[in-house]
Amino acid sequence: MLSQRLHEAMNAQVNAELWSAYLYLAMSLDAEAKGYKGFANWFYVQFQEEQAHARIFMNYMNSRDAKVELLPIEPVPASWNSILDMYTHTLEHEKKVTSLINNLAAIAVEDRDYASVNRLNWFIDEQVEEEESAREMIMNVEAVETNKYGMYMLDKELAARVFNVPAPLAASAE
Ligand code: MG
Image (cartoon, rainbow, N blue to C red; front, side):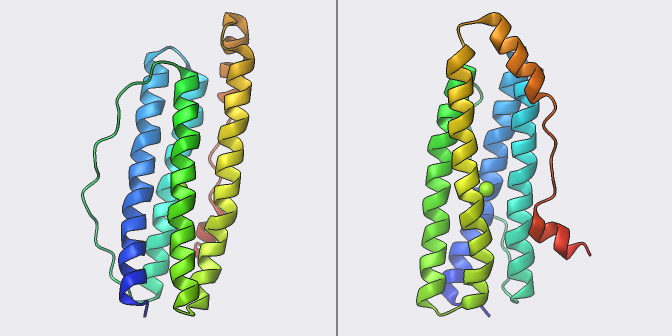
């Protein structure tokens, strides 16, 4: 069993991951509306990753006999001023998610719940990657955003991004 407070915080994290999924789906739709199919694909893969994150938490909670309660998902913005704006928002958002994950890890450590610490370690590493990739995308877009051909080429490149099932889900499918 998880402690009551870790149970509640993890349940809130399921909702936060689904909210993230919703946020990136909105960015994907807005990128497509702006004519950028490749950026739309990048954000769509991000949407899939966030759903996987929620699934990893739900699987873990189930395995610890902690009931998952699905809470309402708050609305997300529908449009952004520019592609650069989307990535700036992405970095800001991922920093918030990092602090939520760190908070969960701090509770798990205080509880001496080392199974939860182990599971959260995967998310701690994942957040380093999420922030790094958002920063890289900001740099990439900043480098070309005033150049139509540059944006066209970057958009084409991002069309190739594919969703890879995260390790904890791949392992549970064995
Ligand atoms: Mg996430």
